[in-house]
Image (cartoon, rainbow over all chains, first blue to last red; front, side, top):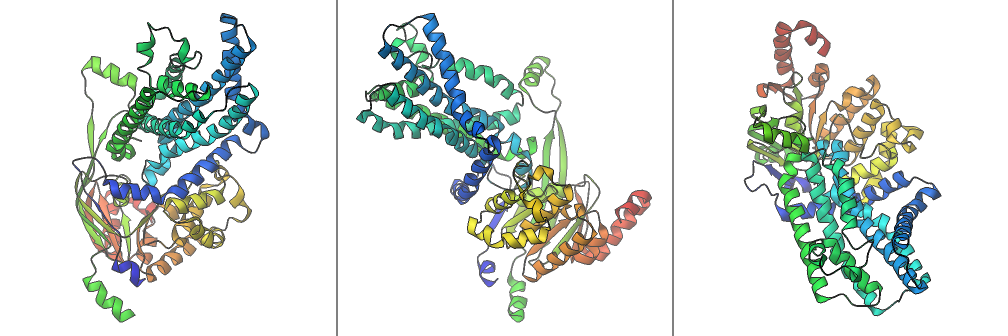
Amino acid sequence: MAEPSSSPTVHVYEPTDTGLPPLHRYLREIWGRRAFMWHLSRSELKAQHYDTVIGQAWIVLDPLLEAAVYYLLRTVVRPIGTDAERNALLAHLIMAVFFFGYTRASLMGGTKAILSNRNTVLNSSLPRLVFPLVAVIEAFLDFLPTFVVYMGLHVLLGQPITAALLWLPLILVLLTMFNLGLALLASTVTVFFRDASDILPYATRIWLYVSPVLFTVSEVPPNIAPYLKLNPMYWFLGSLELIFTGHGPTAKGLFMMTVFAVAVFGLGAFYFLRRERDLAVRL
Amino acid sequence: MPFDSETASLAVPPTIEVQDLWLRYRSSQEATLKRTLVGMTQRRKVTRYVEALRGVSFTVQRGSVCGVIGRNGAGKSTLFRTICGILTPSEGRVVVRGHVTPLFSLGIGFNRELTGRENVLLGGLAMGLAPEEVQEQYQAIVAFAELADAIDYPMRTYSSGMSARLGFAVAVHLDPEIVLIDEALAAGDARFKKKSSDKISELCERDCTVMIITHGVRIISSLADRCLWLDKGRVMAEGPAPDVVDAYLRFEGVLDEATAAEDM
């Protein structure tokens, strides 16, 4: 016991002006909780899907059915000619639904991140940022099997496998950063405005319709393109569409994705850390 | 060794140092978008400030047990949350030398759907321990909590006593430096209370510092070295446990005899 007493960890709690915790220490605290975050996400997902095969399969089946509905919708509205065109559309719809699902799940998970961990937030001094982080880890873990299934379908539907796919990790990193920013914003906003999560299903639905999910970027009429380009998902899904059809992403696409990822993550992290100390009081 | 620690304790600063601590928070209705919009049109601001702590100062030395007593709403839990860093002081300063392991009435329980086993692991990891460190103590934790097969059931099936026992077992087995216990002992049965107070004494011999909130003033008199009595956010008395408990009971006895008797 001689050792810890010679260099104990000293915590000083005082009213702060800036409202931001010391970042260096905060990041170290979070890093020290990586095993915790990993285990929490794993066991929460296990509890959610439980042990059933259907439960596991549902992660993939649910977005696949959604894509199937959109496919029906598209082919009813405007029947398309060749098999190749139909396959390309189907591949696009599945890809877009799966990737959009990752962002949507992060956002939805974020709204519940603090509220559903109310007891833990009130009774432990864990850095609160771990909860939205766990929400994004869970969304990512649910996204992974859908991604694997997509790659299988991509090949089955005769879509090209090219070197352009090497851009995928970078786009995923940027998308994850963007999603984390969204989750951070959502987790804070819902504590201060409890009914915000009621609006969310409508908001994400509209968001999906104005994102290149039901349509491809190449189908966008030039007169509405400037408006759609304000939507971050236009750039993410647009770039993904390019690399999955065998083209490299555009420089502008890469630039815009980076801007949105950094901006939303920065805003989310700043807002969250500013408000973190109020969270326990507001619960 | 004893000689060393004697001399060291003269120079060693207190483990917990609370200086003129004030804590206010806004008490308003649960905020919603709807209420905010309605509020904007009504131009009516209903915000009340609650002063939970008003200039609290005290120190706790390493290896001692400090009891905290007082009525409901005296600010005891708020004080503990501030020492843990869950709430930020409005004024004043809290210095804590060492890692704090909070043990509040709910105990562990990150997810009530998960089994006791998984929650033990999560509880340890949340304290920043490595998975192996938790595994090492795992058998001792389960044995101490006396849960037997229930350890593999979801925690939502646990009684409050079972949750409290598990929470206490996790907190005391993972080599804590400072433990804050808020009523966690109250949920256990008589035998477990005895067992846990023995465990607390054992922790103190290993230089662990303990602060404990309880309405069972008898426990405090026997377990604690010193005692802090809070009332309406102020310190009414701080000193040797029997004296403070005595003063508290006399004070409460005058004001409200029935309640004081129940608290005993």
